[in-house]
Length: 163
Ligand code: HEC
Image (cartoon, rainbow, N blue to C red; front, side, top):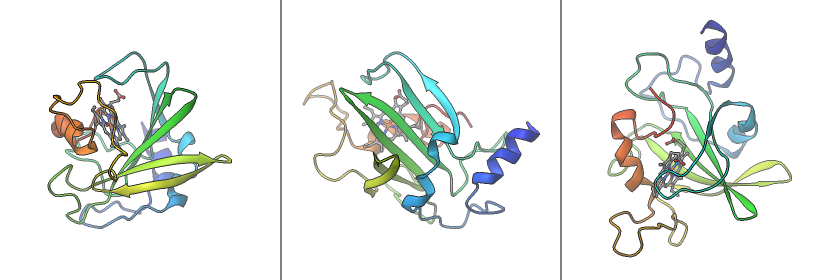
């Protein structure tokens, strides 16, 4: 556990990690995301299909936390056809995204020559950039990031990295 915490501090963009601060991620914060703590997901969940989906987290929350600290970056990599889709969520804090997943900013990244580049960011995806939802037009879920992640509100809107 001690080793794990030391490893996390390396990636903690806010020394001391005080939660009432604001962290605005820049592209450079994602550069080494493949070296972060990695969780491998298999199978199909909620219409996400694929062979290997990976979740990378910049720093695990301290045991017993009730939320992820400001400055936490989480990237999900999922194969879609021939390419890999990279979505991310960053704990920005500062009252951001109050009507969706409070404190979290959403991102899509694309690796270009091995460097992750930010395609878009915000409280919700730009029109046409949300998930294609298998439930179809009648589905209550509209592909906006906030909608599905609200289902994980008791884990600070994060599905696969337990608090
Ligand atoms: C259809 C429901 C749904 C929508 C819409 C959705 N997600 Fe997710 N997301 C999930 C589920 C379920 C997981 C858990 C991992 C998995 O099953 O793929 C997840 C995992 C993630 C993770 C890894 C952290 C975690 O919560 O486990 C990130 C980052 C992420 N999603 C970003 C996004 C972004 C950005 C958007 C909007 C473009 C988005 N998601 C829209 C359901 C959704």
